[in-house]
Figure 1 (cartoon, rainbow, N blue to C red):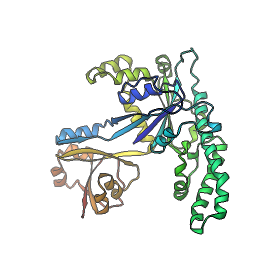
Figure 2 (cartoon, one colour; figure 1 turned 60 degrees about the vertical axis):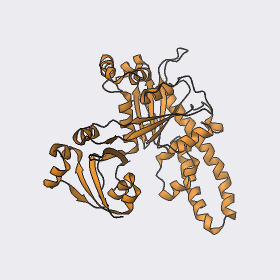
Figure 3 (cartoon, rainbow, N blue to C red; figure 1 turned 90 degrees about the vertical axis):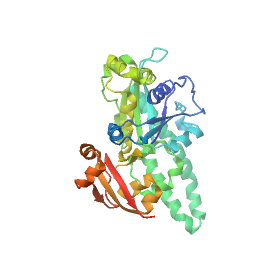
Figure 4 (cartoon, one colour; figure 1 turned 30 degrees about the vertical axis):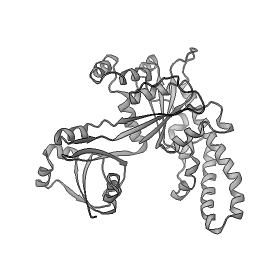
Length: 363
């Protein structure tokens, strides 16, 4: 998964990036506009895979990963006249699975208190206005193109026109483009526009320590966005979590206990990302390698096999499947076979979170 991190200037988004990745990027490195993107890859913690590793003691142990991209901030007041982000940042967002928007939850350098609800509304508006600017610009040109386009191209242009008109309606209502369900062909027709509000989005409030303790896990106020699909919100104390992430592993448990933190934000945010994107994990296990694979919830066995290798999808015959906890209880694949616990599933079987799958295929 690729998660693009953005937010208004001085929201502490690079501090959050450091907290999620364990890096130590200078937190004043970004100003609004074009800038280099910071990148960090994080292993997805999964106790189920850890137990498989203990059972098989494999030569190779490969957890799933999440890639975070720390982008330049969104410029306040820019959406109505053009891009809320520069071209490079828009390209990074286009290639990402979701947006993580950091919102200031602490007093700023001038002593101004946080305005979480107002900032969430404002950044959502900036993204919607940036999208609306693109949609309006394209709609002005597409009618003329339809008049002179060859017959072979008209179908695609008509799909694009219908999709953009539908998106324009919800954007003008102040709702994100993901509020409507487009037909697959329509969605494909406008994919190249890189609309910000089509991306699944998580609003992450970066509290100061005082605000974080006062909130005590209270959900951030999403207002009208609470009704939008593929929208989540959470909280963390970025400065505290950054310090935790940069501690040696053996010192973290004591630090967490001292501050009353149940688990590091890195784990909580990954769990939220999986929820936001509707992702699950299945495993392949054995003495050579124990590995986690990430797929969309509802994925059937044949395309899931393709995540392992394209040859497995093309030549798919069937899959041997067992839940991770069943295998752990039995102690080995040999025992699972002896007890008849390895189920044979066909290409249409819907892979479940925690499945262990061995694919049988022909070359």
